[in-house]
Image 1 (cartoon, helix red, strand yellow):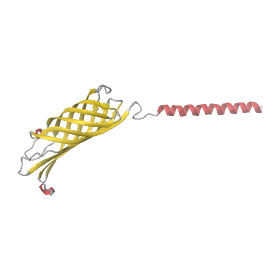
Image 2 (image 1 turned 30 degrees about the horizontal axis):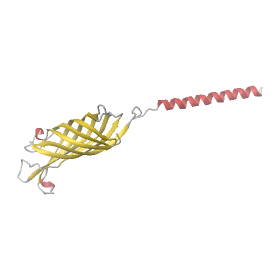
Image 3 (image 1 turned 90 degrees about the vertical axis):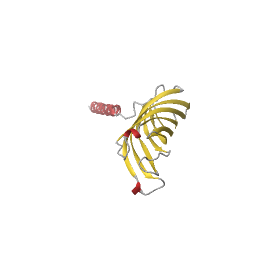
Image 4 (image 1 turned 60 degrees about the vertical axis):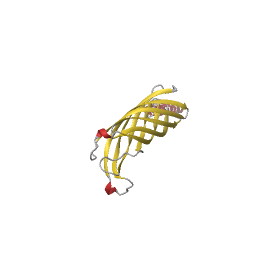
Length: 202
């Protein structure tokens, strides 16, 4: 009789053990993560030189661009630019324009393993412009405005090495919201081009 009871107790314990183990296994299977479907996630970053125009005047921007590449195809990141050339204001004598913008971008890489490949992208961001006296730090004499920027781009990317890529691109900067005296959106919208260095483990 005692042996029979022991057998029953052992069977119950074993059943509970396997049930608990199966529940733990099911819990593991039900967990999902944002990046679990991506076989590869790598980061990159580097400087950018961009050429365009403001108020029909040649303009040079310097900037930075960086982000992550998912599955060697999908690109997500941040980029920003600052106007380096002198663009004289058409409002007053001895006044220059300052222009900075940046934001989020999303892109796609075609045939990532090829030595030369294409990569379209879209920047969605914002910016600021200032009309200020030359060499003057007094904000009282500054006129500023905020604007929205959309910049689609098509880049020809070259795989220089495992850790370096070089890009040549063409783009169009679309802006909206310019409300600065004697200026319109079209004064800051422009076709342009850029060259970029990208450092990372590709």
